Length: 145
Ligand code: DQA
Image 1: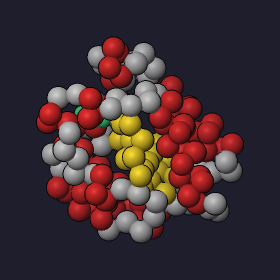
Image 2: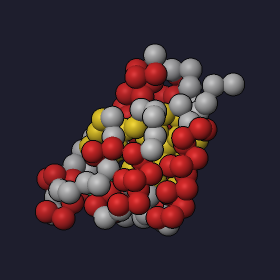
Image 3: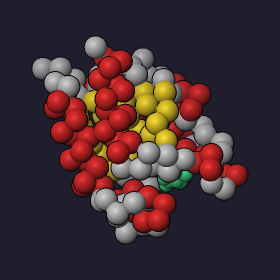
């Protein structure tokens, strides 16, 4: 069986829908999971969708992606701007990696303008709200074709 596309989510994204909805929208993490899953199926792929509030767990999942995933979509949330460990784990991957953000961090506070992830990513999807999850899956499907 073909490997799944990993869709990994970092801290506070479990509260999507109630968390600052003016910035992140009203759709829940379950809603964006459904969107990503349906979009992957439409391209003949399946996804492994996970969320954690813990940096080490996110690092372990990125390591898992080395031999278990066809591609990785990752919204590292706050760890985008802080985590050398997430950066180092991503650098070990030899599969397409899409950095994903609901908001556009470059339109926000200066501390969000630095990403430890972008230099280890194949591409970036940001500022498109929940729809970005579907667009990121479209992007990896195109890269895998
Ligand atoms: C986010 C943007 C980050 O700056 C923030 O810390 C998040 C969510 C986004 O999806 O827009 O938690 O990654």
